Image (cartoon, rainbow, N blue to C red; front, side, top):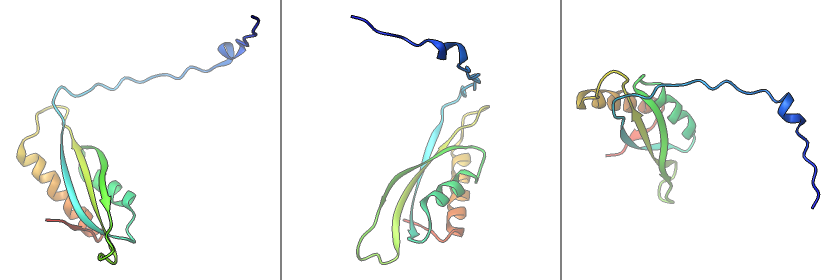
Length: 115
């Protein structure tokens, strides 16, 4: 068997500097928001708006979406807000305040929270 290995990339390769981000000592939590959004409203704009509501929100994920024929101009979305505080355990009042702010922000876009 015979093979050739070109190792010149090892000499010229630039190594990227990795930055350490300390994880929180406190457990994160999540809260879901289910809503009806107009078909003209981009899901990414809902996610971005929710993400910018509060600094406790570390990540926003799209959990589910669906459309029905009888719904002419809306779709159902469920987004999950991941909350984390670096210095304390979140209390129910903290979580409820973020949920309320996030629902108001997506309502301003034209979406309606499902009950």
